[in-house]
Length: 301
Image (cartoon, rainbow, N blue to C red; front, side, top):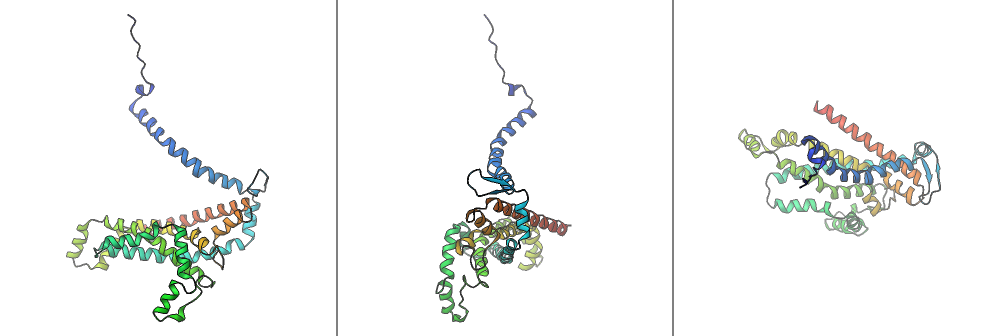
């Protein structure tokens, strides 16, 4: 009787180390492919389109090299809108300070803490369009804010909150603070609650009050989280788009760099120039992030 020859799988003959690498590579293949298709490839295309003059339809393109970049840097109008981001940048510091304050307060075990957690985080769960419409009614003439000011006898403070160029960006930045503070709050609260309770007990025995506990226990323990939140918030302030676009469409001096980029692409059909503006914004964000990391490294040293 002829013996049956059993085929041994190739993977079975490999060493454990090789099998491990093959399995890890196989599991990484799908996410890496998705990352390349949906993230890296669009970014590479953006760099390519920034070198073209293209209306966004068809193959009618013309290679202009760095012409789009030269146009951006030679026209101050494109960068003047970055001053609008300063309002959101200042709002970022207020947003982080409030989030840290409420997270610290709730971590001390106030009554109805679960209720307040939900109230604080709820705005972040809401759709940006819904928030835009809510605050359109809030800021409109004779709207919620004006009615409240008249109710408390501060009728003289009533203004055109979204029509006055001196107030519109403050109003929009306040809306942004209201929406995103809950996100920072949850991250801060999670970091504070990870601190062992024995440290607070030992500090209380030594006579440390709440402010001293925050200064010498809480803040040093969550310093990295504060830095991370600051980086994310500042980058968000530079590339703000959603709230001013929904509420004002970028009118009355509320146009940001991203709104201007979108209008350049989809309103004026200058996709090559818009891609160059997106590349410039990309490098601005990288530069700011690098400066922040450098600052934090020096501070740690």
